[in-house]
Image (tube, one colour):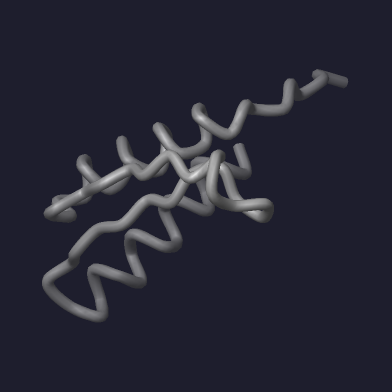
Length: 67
């Protein structure tokens, strides 16, 4: 059985940015909020053209982070 190594928060955020970029999201911004937040290290903010694209982005980011 293979062991999984936990990703660092910066790696999770970068993967989300990479997926968003690959899936044609626009205005992608990754904010480092470690100094101002107790519940999150990074926020990834992006725009999409349609609800369908948002759903696709959400599903793909979840799939990439789960694997």
